Image 1 (cartoon, rainbow over the protein chains, first blue to last red):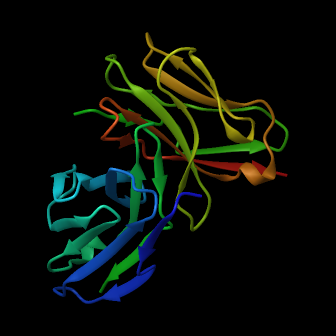
Image 2 (image 1 turned 120 degrees about the horizontal axis):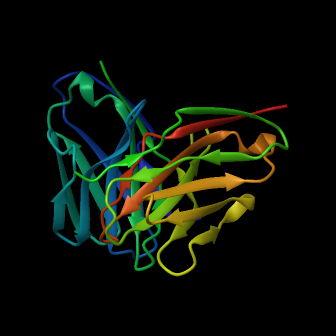
Image 3 (image 1 turned 30 degrees about the vertical axis):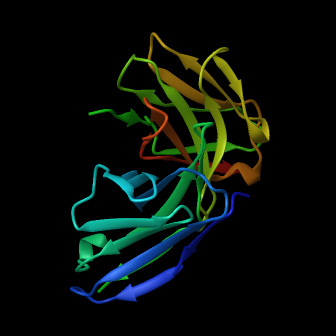
Length: 111
Length: 112
C-alpha cells in the first residue's frame, strides 16, 4: 500500500470554527489532491498541488484553502466550517504513472 | 465541463454470474481512463487503467475493461463475481494525467 496517512480520521466540530485536515505521504510523489465524497456525487476535487507551494483549485474549492510547505504534507483548511462541509475527505497522491493512491479518509461532521 | 457518467447507481447480481458496470465520458479527445473500487470505510483502490495501446485492459481480481473511443465508453466486466466483490466502483477520466474526474459510483451487490 502507498504510504499515505490522514489525520484526524474522525472529527466533529461546530459551525463557524476553523478546521485543518492533514495528509502525509512517504512516497515522494509530486502531485497531491484533496477530494470530498458525498452520496450521489462521487468524488469531487477540492484542491490539488503539483509541488511545494504550488497549488490550484478544483471544482468545489469555495470555503477551502490548502498549503503545501513540504513535499510530504498537504493541509486542507476550512476557515469557518459550515454544515454543508460535512463529508468524507480523501487525500490522494500520484506520480508519473497517472495512478492515484488514496488515503483512508477523514470523516468530518459539522454541527 | 468534463464529465463521467456511470449509468447504473446500483447493480445486484447473483454470485458466479457475469457483471458489467457501465461508464461513459464526455469528450472524445485523448484520455486516460481508470476504474477504482472502494470497500466500506476504506479509501479507493485502483482496479485497472487505460493509458494507450490495447483497448482491452485487464486488472486485479479478475476484472477487465474495454476502451471504446467511438462510443466514449469504458465499461468494466467480470465473468464470474464473488461475494467479496461487493463494493462501490468508480470510473474516472483524466485528460492531462494531473486532474481526475470521477463518476458518481456504482454499488455492486453480490447475492449469495
